[in-house]
Structures are given as C-alpha cells and as structure tokens.
Image (tube, rainbow, N blue to C red; front, side, top):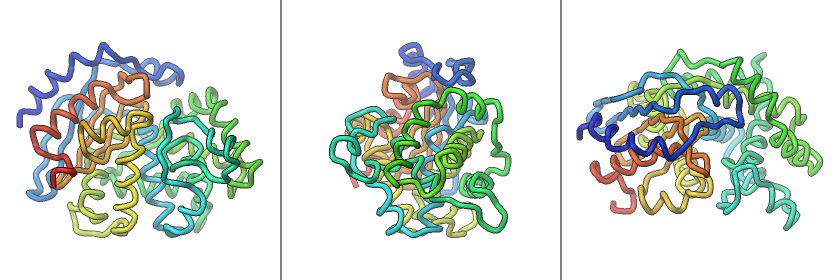
Amino acid sequence: MNLEEAIQNSWRRIDEGQVATYIPALADVDPYQLGVYLFNIKDNKRVCAGAAQTRFAIESVSKVISLLYAIEHLGLTTVNQRVGTRQTGFAFNTILNMEITRETKPLNPFVNSGAIVISSLITEENGQSPVDQLLAFTRKICHDPQVSLNEEIYQSEARTGDMNRSLAYYLKAKGTLTRSATSSLETYFKQCSFMVTCESLANLGAVLANDGVAPWDGERIVSSAAATYAKSVMMTTGLYTESGTYSVRIGVPTKSGVGGGLVAAAPNYGIGIFSPALDQAGNSIAGLDLLERLSQQLHLDIFKY
C-alpha cells in the first residue's frame, strides 16, 4: 500500500485533537506530525513514511514493556495475583473498583494504578535499579540502543503527577504495593519518559506478533505465554475507554500513549505510529485513523482469521 497517501488521508484528523497539555513538557510538542513504520515479519520487509524516525515520549506504551518484563522475571501467576485483566469504562486514572468493591488489586495493568503496581514489582537486581533494568529491556525488545530517558519530561511528569501520587499512596495503604510509593512512582514516571520512534514501537509489535521471538535475529525475548497475555490485554484495554470501539473497528491488539505513540501487533506485522494530537480518551486521533486504514487495506483484523 502507499503509506504516504495513507498519511495524507489521515492528516486531516489532526485538527480534531490536541496534545497532552496536562504534562507541561508535552504541551510544547508540535501536533502536526504523523509517522508510521511497518515491519512485515513474514517477508522481513520494513517500510515507513512521515515522522517515522522522530523521537517522542513513550508514555503509556511503556506499560506493555514493564508488564512483559514483570511476567518474565516474576511469572504470570504472581502478576495475575497483583493486577487484574478486566476492562474499565472509566478514565485511565481510575481506582473505582477498589473503592466500591474493596478489591485489593487494580482492574488491569494498563490503567495507571495497575501500571504503578507492575512497576513496584520490579526491584533492584545485580546492582541495577528498576529503571536501569527497564531501560535495558526496552532497548532490547525495541531493537533500539538509542532509547534514553528524557530528564525534562521526567521532571515534568513528577511535578504534575499528583493524581498518580494519590493512586500510589492509596495502593500502598491497601497493601497492594511491594515497594514504597515514592520509589514505585519514580520508576513509573521515568519509564514513561523514555524516548522512542515509530521504528522502536514497530519492533516491539513485531516481537509480540512473532510470539515473543525477535524476527531480526531469532532470539526469544519473552515467552509465548507472556506475548499472548500482553496482546490479549492490549486488545481489551489498550486504548483506554475506547478499547471496545476500536477492537471492533480495527481488530488489532494496540496500546496507546499520551505522547502520541501507538504500538500494534497484527498477524505478520509489527506497527508503530506517532501523532501527538489526542482524542478525549487520550489516544492519537490521526494515528488511530491511520491504523484503521492499514487494517482495512492490509486485512489485519484478527477476527477475520
């Protein structure tokens, strides 16, 4: 397919969204950007267009990576004991189920409370901090040694992250966090501040699409069980309150971040997209439009297989 033409068709949607102004460092990002990178793991072909090599904050797409890392190091049983897998009809910073039903774990690993719990499970190992471990793992699974922590974005996240602080202290009071709220939040804020490209995310999607095996060298990076689990949760909860809507319209496991990134793991494809103008739910508005076009034209919908 013609990616440049697809970008032109989706570009018109940018004006319907806005950048994540509640994080000051993201408020200055130029909204008029749209890039895409496709990794065809069957034919080992890679194509890109637009702002495919522009670096941006990974934000909530990092939740996929920390989830995979936690599963690999602690096991799926342990992760399931601490975080659920259910959808929520509420915002990504909700903790409503724990307040109303007195449950002891967040609904899923992609709401902020669940992601903070996942981050808290990662502890210092062999002299490496949790952040260093996640950075090294991100570089590996994204096949991108240039992934780095953006200190300005991290400080901006930390200064304005009072809602996440309230979630963390609530979780700590309930005995849900395994580390202190402060250290858990530091890990979470920093992992969200890693800088990636569309190519980075396409590589991540390609590993998931290839059942946990890196298609560039054949190394198994995560187990088949971890890859399947992550894709399942991406399908049901990866796009915040719009997850069900886009599961029907696109039919591809996808995770978004308020930095404008999208990672998708489709049959035979890893896909990375970037466009920082967001819809009301916090998803890239032009990015999802582009992903929907790709799904239709490349016949990616998993429910048609």
